[in-house]
Image (cartoon, rainbow, N blue to C red; front, top):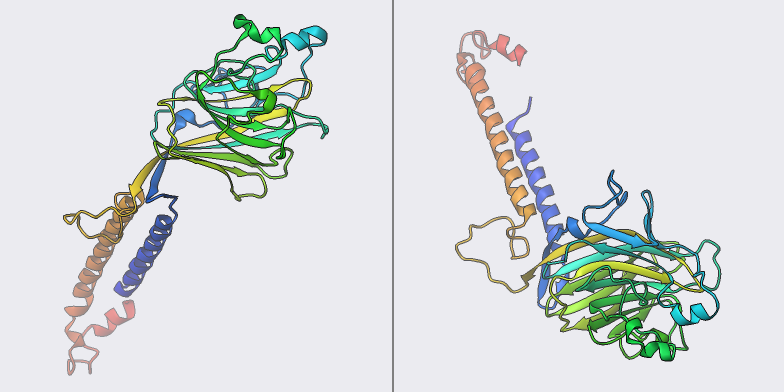
Length: 380
């Protein structure tokens, strides 16, 4: 039979477990200057996982096209390891317009003020050759599904003499943010490839892919994300009017490497999230495995608590008002109710069979056992 001492021990154990879990969760905060990310809310509209498509072979929140195709068990392959088939003069004139390319774009704009986008991708070849390219890009831009020569999307001009002067062949420039995962160096550099770089598009400036964006990108790092034995990921954290931070996972599992960070960064409002890739004479498989997007809610680190707020077991603004605190209170209240119920039942049982039994009085009939006392002692 459960005694009140067991109930007390169980209640204390439950309290300790929940309090310890809540405290540990509260310590897991991302510092942002004098603020922290209090919580994140996943955005289903901008997240993507296998099997990627529904029974109608479509996705409610995403579009894909050009050479992209879906393997429902593995990935969305933007481009295959298959080089461009154009040859001769035609290739020299219009290679930037007709190359192997594929794209994946969100159907809705990303309206979150602050957000985190984590992308798992894979860039590799089937034969492990030494020649590969060209790369892929992650887009947060005003327009969507605009195929072109910048890793499969718009934003550059054709650098082939007279062809570049033909306005009808000039491609529109992008407006927003592009993060390039470039695997092929078009010219000599003092850094190594693969290369991750970020460029802010103003709608007027063309990306100079002949020089791999030198002098145009605001941040970059060399990261050997191609043909790795671990899951390769990129994490983009943006806080409006504050900063843009890009991290990479390519060396080991759960090991994030800082790539670049831009302070006082201001992104256009409500951009579309997209991915594209391109191949030419050299090629690679460019795969998107998953996309996870969260809306980030900030909480000032030095915020003062409301004096009228009732005292709880959670201290500090980071834990106040969270779902974890709410569920803890619900479980605590339920535990008190259950403990009270069993305590009341025990009290009634003792009054019925114990406290009213005059056989417990010393000197009673039966030498302390009392009349009828032995019977109840044997039962219980």
